[in-house]
Amino acid sequence: MKIRKSHNANQSVLNTDAFDKRRFREIFEMSSGLQKVRGESELPLFESLLADIWASLYKMKPEITLHIDSDLMVNKSLMERIMAEECFVNFRSFTRLDDLSSAIGAVKFGEKTNQWLAEQKREDEDLQKQLEEILQMHRQLRRHEWEEETRSESRKTDEEFTEMMTKLDEKLQQILRNNSESFSQALVQAIQETKQVKEGLISLLGGIRSGCGDGDLKQVPLRDQISLAEKIASNKKMKEIAGWAGRFKQVARKKQKTKYNEAVNRSGVTIGTDIERLLPIELGLYMHPQTKTDFLRRFVEGQTMMYVQEGREVLGKGPIILCLDQSSSMRSLDTQAKGFTLALMSIARRQRRDFCLILFSTHIQVLKYEKGKIKSSDIVNLAQIFLSGGTNFAIPLSRSLSVINESRFKEADVVFVTDGEDEINDSFLEEFNKKKKEKAFNVLSFIVGSHVNTVESFSDKVVMMKDFEDESSYTAFEI
Image (cartoon, rainbow, N blue to C red; front, side):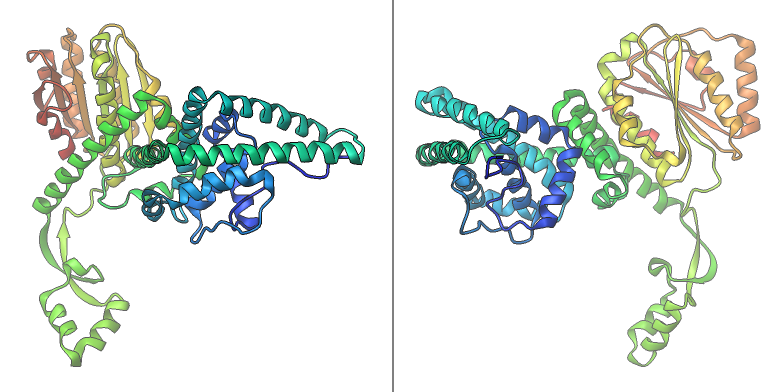
């Protein structure tokens, strides 16, 4: 006969329903972070605790239930302690009904709970002994769920486990009272790290439009969001790239806004519903009680008069091509360069232009992103690439021409970044500059930390900079 009580992950101390449990199982399967935290824990029924942490972050009104199994008293004590924290209550405004934030939060809360318990165990031999015995008993219970036992043996095993869990709960409550501040600090750290990971994800996947970060994320499958978020949380380089991408995208947003404001010209009148371009007379009709209804009718029908403006959209233009030096001497600037790349890519996405990244040293690697759109797996791949080696200018320039020739549009923009020098054949330069005139594309070059070299022979403009953080580099975001 199988054991009567199932010691699995489908137990809860909260008012969770079938949807909550099913949704957590789906997210748990997506999240290697949740699986890793579960595997590292020394608490029995820790997966159930993770599910409750997730539900407490996700649900609109999570509550501790009145009647629970004795086996779950430890989970109940921890959840009561977590949910009583003021920082947790405030944090829920950030996570409610947000699958991603709740998933990241569950991972971080689980990590900090594990770390806190490990610290307490090192300082308390009695706790250490209790945990070891309970884990051994729990493993035995899980084996017995698939083995035949007599009713009396089953009942005895259950009772022993329940008694051990009751004693552990008493011990844990005592430790929580005596070490309240350290547990609170662990929760604060979990909250801070969750927010940092979410901000990093928005920096990597978001565009340059202000206030659209969460909207941009929703266009990415949740599985991919979680995967990339966990890479940011665990990989120092990914975290640095996210930081630089966020910083450069802010600059790009300002540069593009300034460019738009300066480029817009009124050149006639048309009809439409763009509020910012409505004629003053239409605004006057809206403000007057007797004409407001007629205005609203015409506005809904798209018949209100507005200015025609030039420069609002950048359509019918060729690709943005970034030739990025990845010779050995550029390695120290790699995370800056990747953040710079993602900011330029966001401009391409905003302008609906293809983006081509040509990484070069003495050889090249070409990455193309249609309309500047990049998947989370592409970001991880980009972060891992570094060519190393020497410097060759002709190879990336030649490939730039090929990309431009493939485009049905003219007026491409080539951004060329290097810290090196290379001799280029005169005949190649002559042919390249000839094609530049024919295809009407521009080359904006950046030289990192050295004097002007042969770059000026194929560039329309050359900018000197110390590194990508140098304000001189921001010129690139005006394309």
